Length: 61
Image 1 (cartoon, helix red, strand yellow):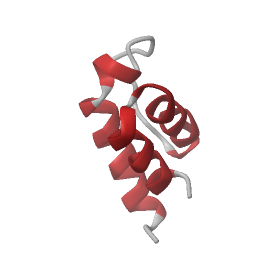
Image 2 (cartoon, one colour):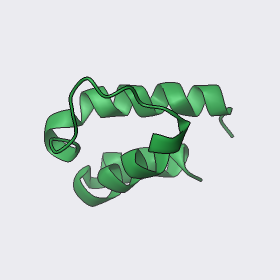
Image 3 (cartoon, one colour):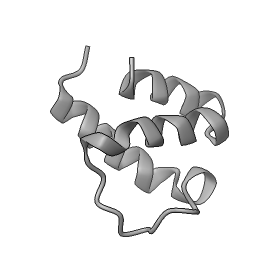
Image 4 (tube, one colour):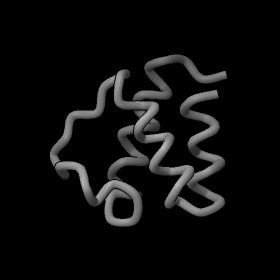
């Protein structure tokens, strides 16, 4: 299981990588915090395809 710091780093990377596909409705310069991880996971599950779905499971187990 990942620590909170590792999950936060992963969420920030996912936001940058999947921005156009999953998070186009959010500001590009949004500072991702711990409270944003459920929304990042939701976007990945809905619009990230299979890789996004698997990544979302790592963010919010």
